[in-house]
Image (cartoon, rainbow over all chains, first blue to last red; front, top):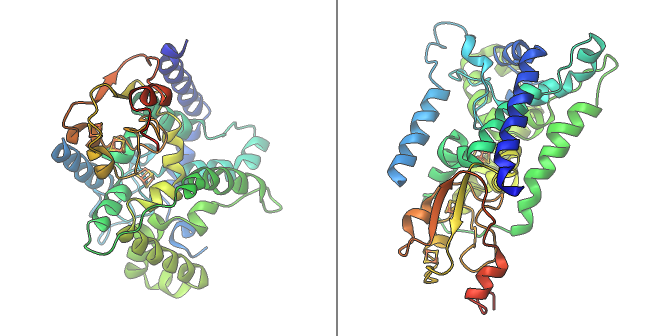
Length: 44
Length: 302
Ligand code: SF4
Ligand code: SF4
Ligand code: SF4
């Protein structure tokens, strides 16, 4: 069983990635990344 | 191999920070590449950053989980965790050794000719603590009346944010300079202390703090890419331990070669004079564990 762990893990995380894309997380990630984050800088 | 790794680190550091138009156009890059999570630690508020930071993105999704659920959206961080998990399931913690710009910075600082301090091993649990508390629990649980949380790791810990975003943006923008107060001063002092620690100890941030390394480390034992130690070939010269940036002591059975601490830099593989370390890609084989090493070297741990 341990032999197939990489396969299971890869499939599980591809499914998770697909879920994230399907549920619309990509625009949320993008919106956050294109705005200067005051917390990252240490201001807000 | 080491030259290849060096090139890979430089290339990825440049690719992750390839937007050099910031002094003339918008203060940070706002193009479509920012939809992608960079596989290493690189602040997306850095003026030159081309991709998003997985830790920042994950915290942000968790901090806004309640409002998003109220709006009927299931934003649980699946995109970020899926991206990281996919990379981890293929290569384990290899991005730490080959891609991450903050890892490269730590490598450079450790080359400075100052006295060296060894790493206190119990601190090795730190990354899990920062991951669970600062990246997951605090953004999820400490929320304002509208249900919005904060990005605690970015705000109170992350030295990459201070170095790559805070300092350059404050230099460029007078308004931000005026707004900087005690929080910036605290983060700046934290950064300086960490940089000093990096000159004394090999990769202290990776080993004691970084939640991204903690996530990748979970995959080292289950990834397609596996390092294999052949104790029957080992001549106990300790060359592998001498070059290892995270002090993985596998030759004497103290650590597992595929433990979460290994950043897959492959330096042990290059330096071993008797080819006792090899790299494999494929289904996980039953590992040669501590007992087997002790069988070859019963007194190794004495
Ligand atoms: S553990 Fe180190 S190398 Fe890995 S992502 Fe974090 S800072 Fe980068
Ligand atoms: S470098 Fe090779 S031979 Fe030397 S101790 Fe390490 S594994 Fe054994
Ligand atoms: S055990 Fe080998 S591959 Fe892992 S971090 Fe140490 S030197 Fe690099």
